[in-house]
Each structure stands twice: as structure tokens, then as C-alpha cells.
Image 1 (cartoon, rainbow, N blue to C red):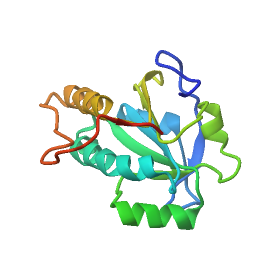
Image 2: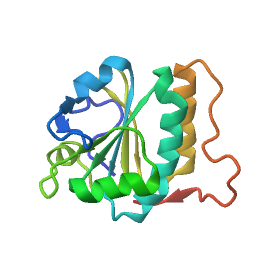
Image 3: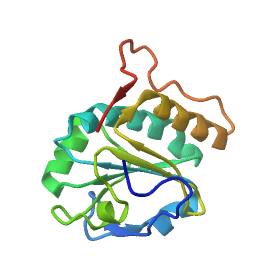
Image 4: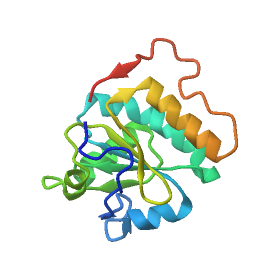
Length: 168
């Protein structure tokens, strides 16, 4: 579980992009285009490896519609994170939380990865998820679809045997 829960204000931050560590982005800037789904992870985490392709599907389906922006926050260094992104086909933005000190992860009260925070456009946390929970991923797809005034995407289409949950 994270220390931050729905209803609380999300801490602002400024982190470098994986694609260009000289360029930083703040949560405040990300929220200008609408809700943000922050996905904290470590590259060695098996549940992160399992979860991120489904987050990629969510990002692909809804990011261009402005109903949610998925942003990964890596607790690893640049080289390891680049390999993770390549291996799992991640195209959404990835930010680097200083490996070893994790100032943003600490501000969000993380105890496990993956941990997800759905942050509304006003900066308040609407939903938190620690680990993989199929029902929560479907609920996020529903929220994104409602924001896009569309039918929710089936993130698990054509896949049998996806577990209901995997703890982080």
C-alpha cells in the first residue's frame, strides 16, 4: 500500500525524461492536458514486467484522446530503464526517479512496485493500485473511456488465463 490515498492531493515533482535527461517535467505540467496515471516501477520487478504491457494498451487506446496520460516513473538508472522500455514495447513517457534516493517515490509513500496513481486534472488522487489487479485495470479503462465519451477498451482481449491479481 502507498501512504497516499484517494482524496489526497498528489505531491508535485519535477523529474527528467528517459529520452532526454536534460529535459524535466513537473506533475503540474502533465496535468494541463487532463488526468494522469503515474505508474511507479523497477525493471527487475516481475509484476511490473507483467503489468506494463497492459498499461501500454491503456496508453495507446486513450492518450491521444486526452482522457488520461500514462507516465511511468522508473526507480532504476537510465541504461536499465531503456532496456525495460525496449523489451516490453513501452511508448508512453518514462521519467527517472533518482536511482538510490527515490525522492518522488518517497513523497508518494511507496512501499511496493508497481504502484499506480490516477490523478485527476485538479491534482487530487482518485485511485491507487499496488500490484496488478485486473479489476482495477478495467476500472481505469472505464474511467478513461468515460473521459473520452467512448466504450471502454478490453485491455485483456483474446487472452485467457490473465490472473485476477498479482501482489507487488
